Length: 230
Image (cartoon, rainbow, N blue to C red; front, side, top):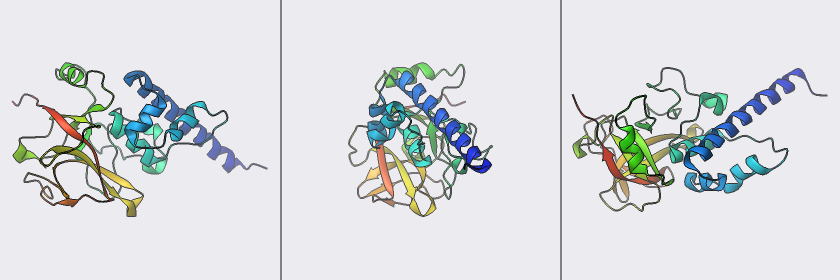
């Protein structure tokens, strides 16, 4: 016999799955992609998304780590209700609480998927730069880790997820903390194999990161769109 607690747990799980499916629907409509294409962009198994879409009676949900990967790959922010409760970011963690994942055990995110504010004069430039290419996504830089490369907070980084990095390229990468529930932190760094290195005076910017199982290079910056400085 199902207890009241079991019933409440099922209700919460059903609501989470419905919210996740609605978010995936938004991604499909916005980018004109299939669930399999979203999976390919996000480096996850296609079955993870296709069974949610097509398997009758499927009652599974996406993990926080999977939501994080899809958000990073597509640039479409996951609403708070899409994330399992234990992974939701606290209010006040950044100007747009739903715009980028906050990883337990890491400092504030150094970048977030670009979401055009109302009336943003940069929006048309970003749209032209992406030009409907599903493997190209815009990010907003929030750190000074590449200040000496003339990249400053507020710059919009256009990232090609399919490009192979060459030495000296600016790359978008994710740092994983497997000791803390696979928490992730998105950073932009210079690619100097076997390391990622910064070029700025911000604390920790010049600390090299060895490219290993704890570092995932997501794409190469092909263009930087700079806001007018006042």
